[in-house]
Length: 81
Image 1: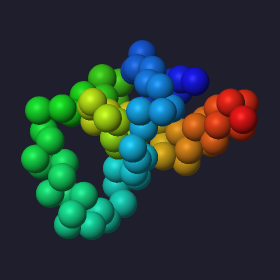
Image 2 (image 1 turned 90 degrees about the vertical axis):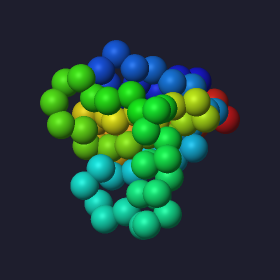
Image 3 (image 1 turned 60 degrees about the vertical axis):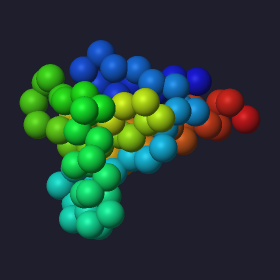
């Protein structure tokens, strides 16, 4: 199944590694990971990013909140089951 991340981005739920709140204090490990993977970042086009979605291939800055994306992913998981 697929999940819409906003900004016309759609990814497979199987490819999602993690969803993080953009404004939350992230651990130093996550911050270091994001710095090293800058070349894979797909920035948000419409406004300020509210969440970070890490996939197998890219890192998306999404204008949708992490709780909204989590609900969408959970809903898709329930449909898939």
